[in-house]
Image (cartoon, rainbow, N blue to C red; front, side):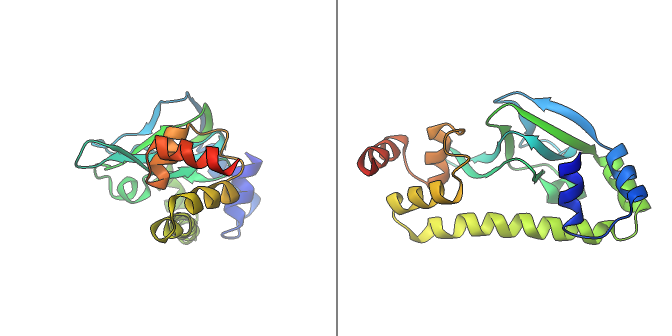
Length: 189
């Protein structure tokens, strides 16, 4: 719970009573590898904070290929936030890449926090902006770099993830085939 508290306090000031109220609205869950936190075609029901593990955001393109577009690891929020807030159907899957432990907020509890704590919406807006900026920073270089450079950038930026994520997901994230990734890995050893 300390990790969640520290994370939130980076984006705004809260007193102990407010922190205790927020924490009282969390439920700890375990998500096994390959289980979904949220599914495309369904309305997202919760916002989570990852205590342990890694999840990925993915979708299926018009050719039926599964595309991973980003990963989220420990001490970060995970949610299809936009669809969660307005309660519309999600277009992405959020899937556990490893076994995960999360603190989750239901829609009802999330709204109750927003209705009780003055300034909560500003804090969550800053958190959302931070998450979006991280996603853009991670994806932008992938557009202009060759496959080897993309892979080297990935292992430089995410050294803790490289050995935790199946190569098929890394290849999908990098926009290359798994065979190409295997060749790249072989050539850089």
